[in-house]
Image (cartoon, rainbow, N blue to C red; front, side):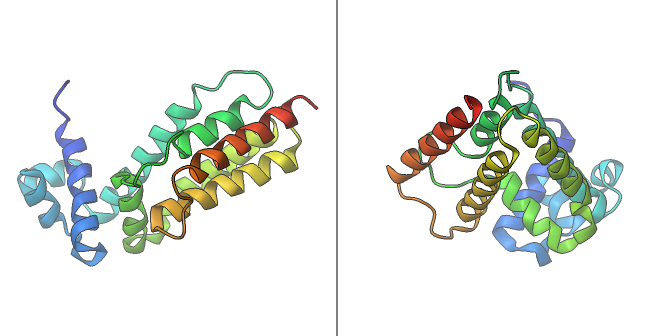
Length: 180
């Protein structure tokens, strides 16, 4: 396994600072210390806190786009990939440091969400052109996004068993919509 780049280590460290100490504790000095990088090394990659938050958003978007790129070209495939990239097959405790840190980071720089807004608009456009009823595709996307938020924030997410049944039902809805 290759050693993560210092840039990746800094992004991981920023996530850890946010999750352990809160958004108000995210300083460039705290991130450099957590990553074991000099402040000069941090400034080379991220001259400002906003640049750091922007890189965290970019990393999240890149990882999600990479997962969506696995979609085939049959009707409903992009929608299936969207569900798969967001909700795991089996119930697991939610521990996505990158996503949790992103939300905390947005408290620091609300403008940093703009690239994510643009990507969500593009994903929505692609979902509605996925060969299934656009209203069905949108209902499923909104259900998945709400489920993601419930998992992230611990807001009454489905228990094991119900998690798997709910995910399977979403996939069945896509299959039915793709065959009509």
